[in-house]
Image (cartoon, rainbow, N blue to C red; front, side, top):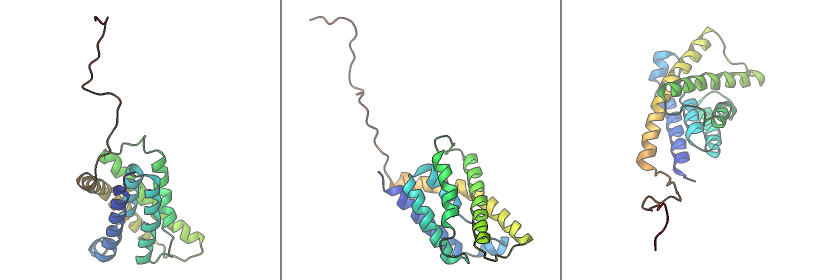
Length: 185
């Protein structure tokens, strides 16, 4: 197993959460913060193994919750609920197509906050809901969808630059010569 992709994904999640908490200009301009964790979850579900997806859900959710008003641990389940179905069907998805990355990133960015809001409401919390909530949800969906192809490109470049490709072993030797017909001694 190659250990580099999970480390790269977790480092990107830490930097994404730190950047969202530090740089407030998008939040001030748009009235909502664009969340990059659902796009990272889509990348992890398509290119990493299941332990990396679970680690991203747990650690990314905890990191995100420390900087938000959410109760600690609330974001773990929505992130995992977004990544696990994609992981199960990743062989059927067009992981290298930018349009598919955009659509998967937008769907993940729409589902993760909706599931988090559902968990908040089911735990008898009183979140502030109104017309502004729809605007914030739309900004998060569109922004997360537009950011997903960029995340795929950046993480793919880092993986190719710092990682190593797995060697494919084969029993066929290209220098072997196959003789056909009768052998004459």
